[in-house]
Amino acid sequence: MALKAVEDKKKRISFWILSIVSIVWILPIIWVISTSFKTESEAVSGGLNLIPREFTFESYRYIFTDDQHNVLFYVFNSFRAAGLHVFFYLIVASLAAYAYGILQFKGRDKMFWMLVATMMIPVVMNLVPLYSLMITFEWINSLQALVVPGLGGVFGIFLLRQFNLGIPRDIIESAQIDGANHFQIYWRLILPLTKPALVVVALFAFMANWNEYLWPLVVLNDDTYRTLPVGLALMQGNYNIYYSRLMAATTVSMIPVMAIFMVAQRYFIKGITMTGSKG
Amino acid sequence: MKPQDAKSLRSRLVPGAFFLPHLIIFSIFFVFPFFYGIYISFFDWNLFNPDLREFVGLDNFRRILFDSDSIYFRYFWNGLRNTLTFVVLSVPPLVIFPLIIASLMNVEPKGYKIFRAIFYLPNLFSIATLVLIWRWVLNTNVGALNLTLGELGIDNIPWLSEQPFAWISLVLMTVWWTIGGNMIIFTASLKEVPDNLYEAGDIDGASIFQKMRYITLPYIRNQLIYITIMTTIASFNVFGQPQLGTEGGPDESTTVLMMYIRNIAFTGGRPNPGVATAMAIAMGVVIILIGVGQAKIIKRMGD
Image (cartoon, rainbow over all chains, first blue to last red; front, side, top):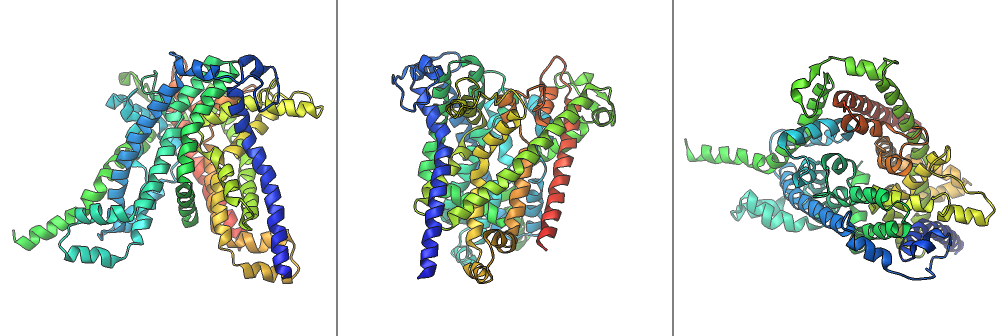
């Protein structure tokens, strides 16, 4: 009885603290969205009002029809690069995870842990040589430069292998007795069974590629394939003091990831928990 | 060749068919650049005219590390000092703050899933989105923060253009941006701490802080090590916040090592990728040493 009361009190205190902090947390986002619906003069006239006095879509109209730096074009470019990257990464990573998690061969675990150990090497060390390689491949300013190098990532294989190790051996052995070869087992058995893990890997690979900033900044030199983060950074200079336009572009950049998050929140949490608790 | 031999040969080739696509890409885009980078660092490298490259041995390292007459020496040490400043200022809040939130979340108050979503949300934004949000909120004349402080009678603060505010702003936006991941890992690991340990603590009359120090922290030690090291590495690689937020200023006081590396390698009248790569290698070595050192210290603290 007394314990229950203590428990309730804890819950109440925690609720109130978290409420206040999370309102503070979300206010910048609301402030940004609010600014995007204000007129430029209201945006800079310095009111803290979250509801625009004069509600307008003018900034959105402007940025959607801007033919110099168009935010929708950058969104499209980002989706294309990240989408292609995810598609190929799922294939490459799930194949490798099958080798390291299901198949038995000599030196398997040693190979796998060596791969994982390379994740400790700071990425900055590869920046210049990778750029140099792009010059050799003639991949500067290409879609391949955004899609391909990241396919070597180990993170997704680590996650998928973890899942594969949990699959009971009998299932695989009985499939083999039925005459299935490994490609059939991979395609018809393992992929469907590891679907939740594949979703997690797809989401993280997508987000990582979508948010990449430094690499596209150095490897692209015009708008052809330019992705959203670099495009936004350019708009910061271009729209300069047109805060309503800038905030409209910012809002547009938030929408896709917020939509993905709303649909797939539990996969994000599962993915982070899986990597963190194995650490 | 007997049929069984052919079969066993084929079954020996099966693993390769599965791991080779990745391993080949990994070798080309990770392993090769790693060694190629070390090679580059021994040259006065020219990205666009390979014939002009010249072997200089360890001279690039000597210039950035010891040659106080060289501009690269100043860049490297200023960059390293600024990066270390950011690491020291940002890692404690990035570890402690999510731990506190996770502890509050751990009693599962009403609506905790909504709170969790709100704290995680900024994590999804790209660096450019993050900086645009905060440059607007922190704007000196018409930003929401200064307007709010103005209501309280505090004069406008130049958040992004003067120290120490520039550092405070960079840490603030990084905390806002990235605590979500650490919070989720902490929430999951706090669930694993058995309730009866806390009950035993209550019986012995332990305070909240004592329970944290003697029950919670030792129990979640592995996650704590993981988070601290990962957060430190992430903070070491800081680039976008100062590049877009403070533009390295005021007076290059927030120009971090990554910014110098990028500038030296790719921009300016005469890019010098050899020096930039030498800097990147030196930075990589520092990151690895600090990571290993942290793991040792935290392990010992727990014993």
